[in-house]
Amino acid sequence: MIQIQGFAFNPFYENTYILFDETKECVIIDPGCYTSSEEKTLLKFISDNNLKPVHLLNTHCHIDHILGNGMIADKFKLKLEANKLEKPILEGSPLWGKQYGINCNPSPEIAVFLEEGDVITFGKSELDILFVPGHAPGHLAFVSHEDGFVIGGDVLFQMSVGRTDLPFGDMNILVKSIKEKLFTLPDGYEVFPGHGDSTNIGFEKKNNPFVK
Image (cartoon, rainbow, N blue to C red; front, top):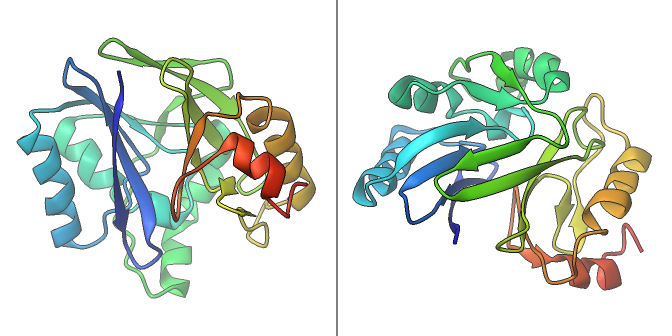
């Protein structure tokens, strides 16, 4: 069974997730740790639980989701894994950082290109990949069918959806991704978003005003 630990990091209160199972292998998704204290918090959890990071994953590469990429990659000798369409977003992150007054620590380039249908394996666990663009051009979601949850990034939030006023954003594409990809999952699947509290597929299908 996969256990999920979330952390709200950086000025954007971005949700960073560590997923691990009984083998102690883990994946780190969207490390947004910005300050040294945030880095220490993340590393302490890994150390205290004797975890072994084996994947560094980005749902997408907006600046708030990549601030800890470099630290994690260096510390655990991991390659960055994301969709190839996020390459220009990642390359533009230092400029976006300046606009928000954030010093963006260098992130490694995407070394492993992920596509829908790929499977991330760690320990005895698997995560299926869905391609859900709209908020970002190469946005991915990571799904555990065995444990019934989605690490969804900035696609679907509790009673809301990801913003589409950033470069390459498109509301029509985002709604299509939600309806055709996320809303075809069972109602009981829990959604762990990139910001805010978790929700579930059934609740959002019935109540989310942006996709009703």
